Length: 215
Image 1: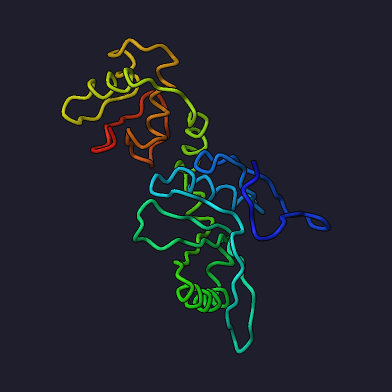
Image 2: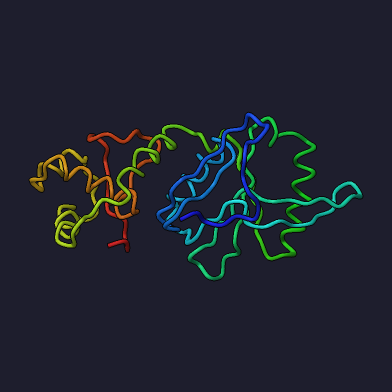
């Protein structure tokens, strides 16, 4: 299923890269207009605090330098927290996001969107493509739909001694899991049940620990 957006995304007479990414949150495909947007969408998809994601969600009017303009954000995120305003995201290359003109324009957009009841956030490529964070998310998404039984969840949780950190490899040995067991652990990391230092590359030697309240 294609998640609806306000305008049709195409690359007719253009060299831009477009595509669709599957969202487990939305149980459907979300469109993007650049590989940078695709990469930020992965961050949104992995954020457990986010309930819903929409691409090219709405179009707004705002004033800049004495003229009226129309603006369509790249993504909208709705949060599980009912008291948090929906967030509209604009994704830009670093040289664009850091320019004085763009910052001035963004300030006008931010003020206009606040009146509509939205938070406005700009994300640039340096933050989006920080490594190994992005590679880790790309890796973990392959295990997003992995099935882990309640029995295995309990066994994994009980293997931790008072919330201590253990290597994935050690957990496999303790639990008597085969290689499929490693996939289950990766799934629990994606789900936010196991935590890790995101600045470390995910390997069987990665240290993880249970997230308090997630179990």
